[in-house]
Image (cartoon, rainbow over all chains, first blue to last red; front, side, top):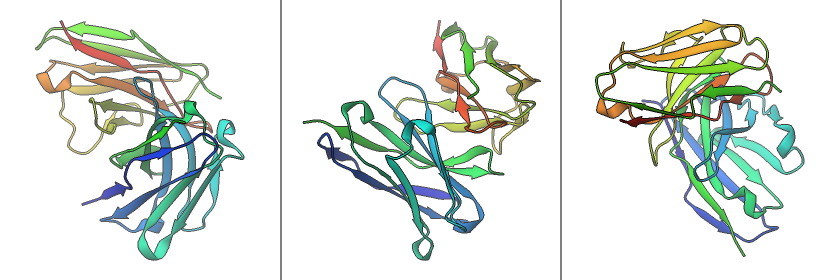
Length: 118
Length: 107
């Protein structure tokens, strides 16, 4: 069965960077896009960006341009999202999600809580 | 960027009753709309894509309709497990965008 398993919770200081991983299994990793969506506590879903694991091509929401980098390691079917220059407003649960037909998100990781605090 | 607006913010419904949730797009998204359900502490779960196609394993009591700018998610007879937050998402235009969510609570 399709699974996306994310790395564990992180606590970071303002100004630091965080790198979250998303390991895919149960399907061909390079056949589907990986998207990243975040959710602050009690808030809605915010799309951050997209990566094609086959080509490595990426697209980022304007809000995160210059601060986010999405990469992958195809040999271990793992996608990564790195967010730099962290501030308190970046405290949120970060989800990876598989893009079906590059459109909707049929499978999601369990989420990774990133807390930014001094 | 297309803005998705959901209404109401909170919907109070009794078990067994019908729930109707609305989602409006700031410009046409054709039928390129998905609905998700999210329960506390869980990741979102895909319910509907293409505005009206149920995802695998989704019960028939969930139905989606609409096109262009106006969309509806209907839950025909609410079960206890359906009390959750529901989000719509458009994928017609880049960047994809979500509505702010509708919380369906027990009346």
